[in-house]
Amino acid sequence: MKKLFALVLVLALTLIPAALADAQARTLDEIKESGKLTIGVFSDKKPFGYVDENGEYQGYDVVFARRLAEDLGVELELVSVDAPNRVEYLTSAKVDIILANFTVTPERAEVVDFALPYMKVALGVVSPDSALISSLEELRGKTLIVSKGTTAETWFTANEPDVNLLKFDTYTETFNALLDGRGDALSTDNTEVLAWALENPGFTVGIETLGSLDTIAPAVQKGNESVLNYINEEIKALAAENFFHADYEATLKDVYGDAVNPDNLVVEGGVID
Image (cartoon, rainbow, N blue to C red; front, side):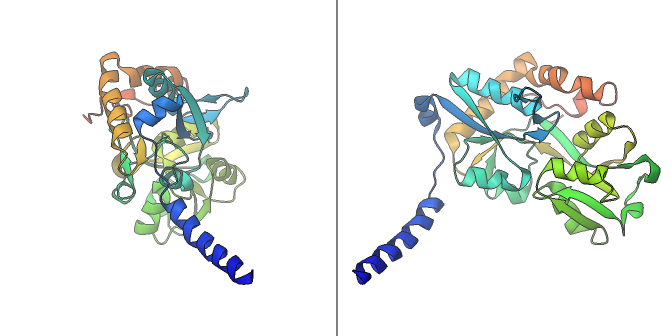
């Protein structure tokens, strides 16, 4: 009996990791057959992906997610993700698509497949007006708040070793840390820090553009060509109605006002001007 138990245990320990490693994303046909499309979005990154006072998902990414499901003719299931687990949610097939302000980088492109872009972005730094940081020189030796798994964490780790990073798992935690004075400044996408500063008097984006100009795009599990092709064709088709500019008007304009030119943020048809 003991030998039989030991054999079963060995087989279980062998097969379970293999099963997890082989978690395959659903094809487009399988999604259609199930009647449901599952998309990972942020729940705390207003105005791109967040849950409102009624418990409903809202934001720029969410509007796009709803359109993808609508045009596919299936129900949409939104799943809350945090920056550090976006890749894992794809590789483990917990979601079909990630639409969570996901910046395209060479490192990420090695483990997931990115569709055509729908936004442009760089890094920005926000700090209190009482101790405004407006240059990298002023930031060195200070404490910078970042979210784990973001391009801000990667860029500062690689390029600014003299900046002390205070890292959190969620965007809510990072901005609360800035409000509480646990850090001197905060860095994430410049579109996000600008939106936050406009809604939080006493804080200003002193460094508006940092690093390279990057793009934000949907992502799917590596090799999931049928879903990737669907997204790409959808992005191209939506250009005919200026979909992403309309999305900007509906979700971002009230936040940015005249502070942002939508053409500097929005990408139509997957084409970068």
